[in-house]
Image (cartoon, rainbow, N blue to C red; front, side, top):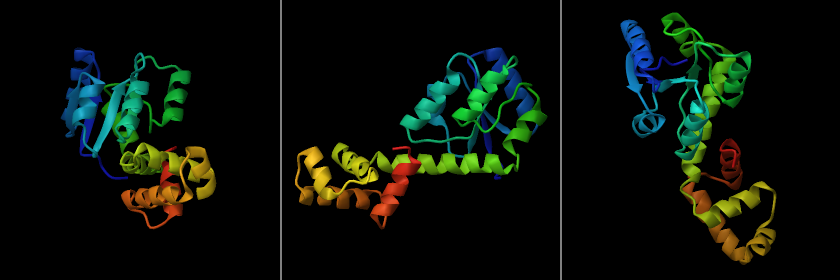
Length: 198
């Protein structure tokens, strides 16, 4: 797995954020501290791995904003008093790990630099989903509707009936959609839709 150049730490608690940032910085890593999730989303870069305080609905808010902006970062929630349920829930939502000993530099680096096959797959799938979403946001509402119906196996004629347009107009939307997605075929467009959970 690639070594991440920057570790973003998102925590609204200044003292905890500073403690974690200092511990990781002393280990030779570049750290970017953020107080708010929205601030990170605005400034974060693709090479970041994100440590986020697992309080309230922080993880859900981060994942929701990442989805809206067609971004993806490896996310590692942390908490000093995590329950088994919260750890399992975070992993099911797509976190690449969970840390319950902070600011333990060794446990952070173990999660970030792990060579586990499952973690590599999570990271690769996350990147592919974000890339697919970033392409799908280029489509018009009508093109997205056509793609949705195509992914359900409908023909141009049936799509036209559903949308109240001619099959020829469906074909034009389909061609425009494929061009915008920079794909070579309908099958590739459908694959992107599947990756984006469209």
